[in-house]
Image 1: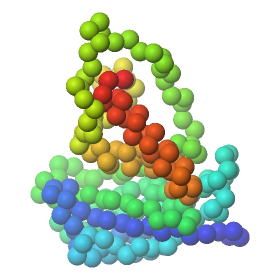
Image 2 (image 1 turned 90 degrees about the horizontal axis):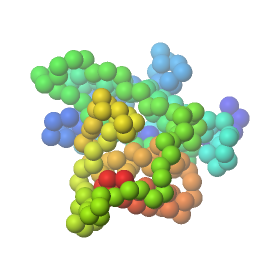
Image 3 (image 1 turned 180 degrees about the vertical axis):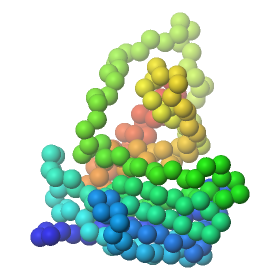
Amino acid sequence: MEGEQTGGLQINVTSDIGLIPIRNAVITIAFTDAPETTLETLETDISGQAEEVQLSAPPFEYSQVPESPRPYSEYNLMIEAPGYEPVMISGVEVLPDVTAVQNIRMTPLETSGEPEETIVIPDHTLYGIYPPKIPEDEIKPMDETGEIVLSRVVVPEYVIVHDGVPNDSSAPNYYVRYKDYIKNVASSEIYATWPESSIYANILAILSFTLNRVYTEW
């Protein structure tokens, strides 16, 4: 395709128990739109890492201008390793001129209850169509005592992520490492091809917003 570029993909594979690197895991890469056609087959080394691979990506300019065509390519990953449940990830996003890092955790067969489900990565929030965020009051009520959740601001090791709207008590809660949460939010809300100063500014905003939630429960 004219104007087509490439982006890197680095894959790291560890055990779900103990985060032990998995050696000799076989990774099959295909376009999400053509899952039956294998593009690359990789194998992890003693550190659980596969060699970085260059994959086709759209023009760089697409990620710099709003309402452009989709600025990233989507790939499917099938990961298989002896003694572990296979993992399928659909929709891994690769942008041009940068390296995407995909960390994968595999469940040992002896501890697995059911076969691993396919993990589907949704469209990026800057590209996909999503319902508007729930509006919030700028000034929020506090208890009469003015009491806050914590006596001081701290950076937590884990945060609780509610997988649903705030008033949906049936939605599950997940404990996620704070650093991983920030990384995941940043990767879904900004593009890695943006200027470095823009990336820093957005991540600082995400950090501030998250810590405010932890500190005040708002």
